[in-house]
Length: 309
Image (cartoon, rainbow, N blue to C red):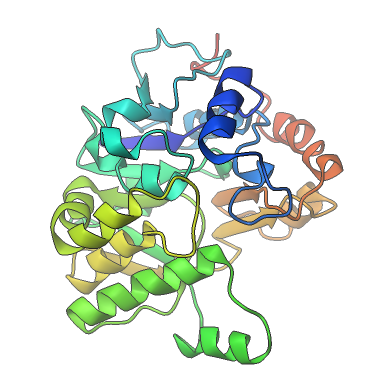
């Protein structure tokens, strides 16, 4: 029994936008931590669900975590989908939050969530037939997919010496690796593959409530992304360190991330035909770049799913 969890937000919703403006101020275009790329919806979730129904129909239930929102195209009468509000999983003192890392660190609290679950951003897609064994080994432990970094932790120091200061994402992933190293004596210098990941709910709970409870409690109060968040990669590294997961180093032939600002998504995708695909929107993308997303996804996943009205 394997479930699938998404975070979803629609920044075009004036009520949501007003709440965010009151809590945190305006969007900062070009900012890694608070640009519109973090919130903009191009109906990616609709197409991700189409990809799941086509390539991973064995998923038991889909949970969509939102902030008092529901996609207008979603058929909420479908028993396989459930919308989960932030108030159901986050402590009151952390609300409202506009930090996806904080929300991610509480997804294991979703009522009814299976012990084995997948987590995806709404811009992540299944791109080929996959079985449960693609994500969980026969012993029930998740397969952790990493992108190999041959220099390990020195990768970050080399970048710094070359004048390339790591951004918020890499900084927090590195922090997670150092936390696990300090606790268990094992350092994982390779980045997560930035695509659909597999977790055990019990490992998530151990990390947030026990092993790194103090760090999790402090990070929960970060309303927007910071350079000192608790990144969910800490759960992956923790599971590897205690023998509750299996590592697999992957390349673009299995897990591909295409930045939205690339010119020809289809051509880039055809070079490898990966099983997993992420169409990653960042602060570097323009509105012209984003205008390419929906037509491309409609071509890639044209058949409506049972999750649509």
